[in-house]
Amino acid sequence: MDLPISRRNWLRTGALLTAGLTLNRSSFALNPVAVNALHEQTLFNEFAQLGREMPKLKARIAFNENPHGISKKAKEALIQAAEVSNRYAMFEGQELKQLIAAKEGVKPENVMLSAGSSELLTAMAVYYTGSAAKSSGGTILTSQFTYDDFLGCAKKFGAKIEAVPLTKEYRYDLAAMKAKVTADTRLVYICNPNNPTGTVVPVADLVAFCKEVSPKVPVFIDEAYIDFLKPEERPALPKLVAEGYNLFLTRTFSKIHGFAGLRLGYAIAPEKFLPELQNYSRGEWNPSVTTLKAGIASYQDEEWQNFCRTENDKARELLYKGLKEKGYEYVPSYANFVLFPIRMKTKQFEKEMFGNGILTSTREYNAQPYCRVSVGTVDEMGMFMDVFKKIA
Ligand SMILES: Cc1ncc(COP(=O)(O)O)c(C=O)c1O
Image (cartoon, rainbow, N blue to C red; front, side, top):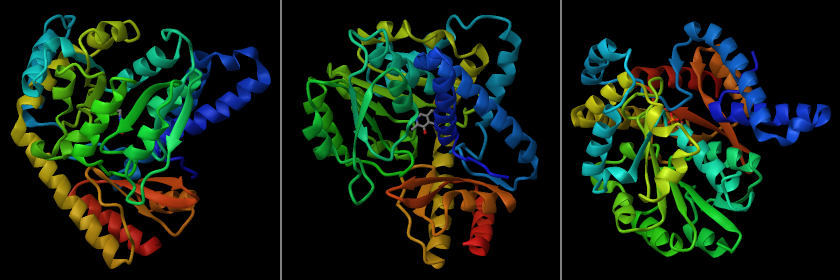
């Protein structure tokens, strides 16, 4: 079975195929919403096929999900919340926003919730490059080899993407990016830690970049994997939002909290901007009452977050050890996935891993194929290495 494994690569492949078809067939090729609907359908069909194969899998380590599930406290909250699941979530969002604001040193008005952070990424793309923008298009400045969800959506709305090469350490090259800011730059997008490289930019460099660039051009930092850094290692960007810098941060409960299926995310941004963005998303009203109640419990459960972070570190070390033993290099990661160059074509690698019960993901950068494997449990990493040693 030929598997296009990455969730986002799937989206991209589907988008290209679908766009090609519609271009040949009808005028609605220019309508990004119509294209989107069609490629989503392709994606769902492909996932339905994968779903039928899934039970045969030994390890699902392709989507950077939390292999430990959700915290016990979140589970209890979810069960209790079943009692009120006939009600709209009128108050729970406020409660969670207050908790987030207190922890991050911002006001609740600086926080916007959403059903997963993808929704915020889409809303940002629509706001900055679609009909909401004063003029459509413009340039989004970013790095090569980064998360393509927001960028893909912005492109559909007519944005040009200026993607600067990574440094040789696979990091965003902030100095090179700064030099590329022009009057046409509509927004800067930075993913930190970066997906798929797992690298981070030095905290002081990022803070200096935000302070210098954001008064000219808004800076969007996707912090989906920030919780895998210890609290003291995280850049204090919410503080800059509180100080009035034009920064937009997104976070998700999908990773360390294990809420990928429950869907919960949030943004931290200037107070004046969020009501405008709310016009392009159901935002606050999208997370269900059950998810919010579980989110409130999980957000306060630091023991669970520490446990997941420690387990992730342990399993990641095991993976590094196995790769080293096999003579493979890898990109040291600050997240729950690891990127490493492979010596096989991407599709063949995916197929062979999948044939042996391992669902993982691949990418190409500068004509070099890479595997991006999610960090699963210690046992799953052992299974991955057993198969990898056999096929590589
Ligand atoms: C960098 C990055 N941002 C955002 C997301 C979106 O996650 P979610 O919509 O589950 O919050 C992901 C998901 O994998 C991601 O890798």
